[in-house]
Length: 336
Ligand code: BYC
Image (cartoon, rainbow, N blue to C red; front, side, top):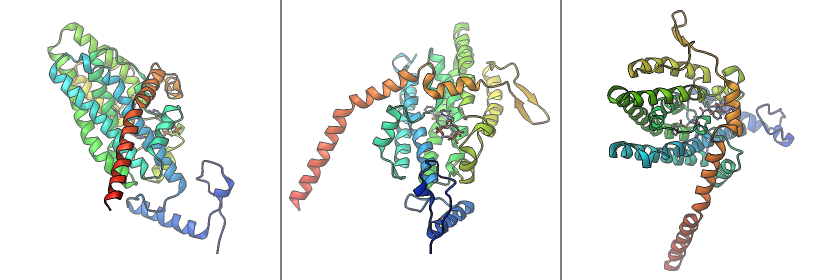
């Protein structure tokens, strides 16, 4: 017996997909019940199309952010001030590459190939975090990225360790541990410059904080009432905490860290609100945010060109790996 129902969750507007069978509806009820019970959904489990698409969108965007995020910091590896700082930065940038790989693997379990995801990045169809479209002008930017950008990333990503999709949640556990090291190394590097540095070095830290503060708090995404994906993602347990709540938590924690560091944050309206038990903060320039994610930030073109070039330059490695794999398979067949 079949019934018909409108799929209000479908984004693609394909009328044929809007007709669902009774079995589908039952599967969906069972799926919703599992989500409500807090169970993990695994790759071979039934899931609604839109749940799958939302995950591919978010996880691939996250993976792209990790590998694009290697670029602004990678820019400073050859100019790190000491061997120790260079070793730390190399390890951090390498970690980001690793995060990209776990995340691409997690997204692949949903049936989208890595080639498809990279094609979407290279053609500008897929998004990556707005934050990586800003330039790293001085060495202090590297410390500030660790402190603010990785700090914001941890705040956003710890709740994803409880995401309803098992492979994404599990990948995030290791990612968060590593991000925690990244945040600490950034903060420690800034503390060294502030406590032991010259006046010029302290000014360099303050300048970097001034430039990165607003883009960092934009990382959490648009305000909840302008976030088209939030409501459904929260219902499905893909997102556990809203954009605005995470932004507020990040600001509350960071203001205190800035005091210890001895830097000011570039927002004259930042003020403790006794009644709310949170910091109030000034208006965010959302026009700048939409401009950056629309492809018109200071470094969008440069970042995308660098990724496309890396992909093109790596063609011979992929060809060699495939040729080797073919040879191995042929060898196995011959031996059999
Ligand atoms: N940048 O409905 P919303 C890292 C897009 S890696 C660009 O709220 P959602 C690190 C959003 O995609 C940091 N785009 O969306 C790496 C949507 O557009 P589409 C990356 C953004 O998904 C290396 C539209 O705006 N972290 O930290 O519910 C070194 C409406 O937004 C941004 C992750 O990816 C943005 N900032 O919530 C150091 C974490 N914000 O796709 C550090 C996982 C929003 O509908 N992702 N958009 O066309 C998430 O938690 C969520 O996807 C977001 C957005 C909170 C980012």
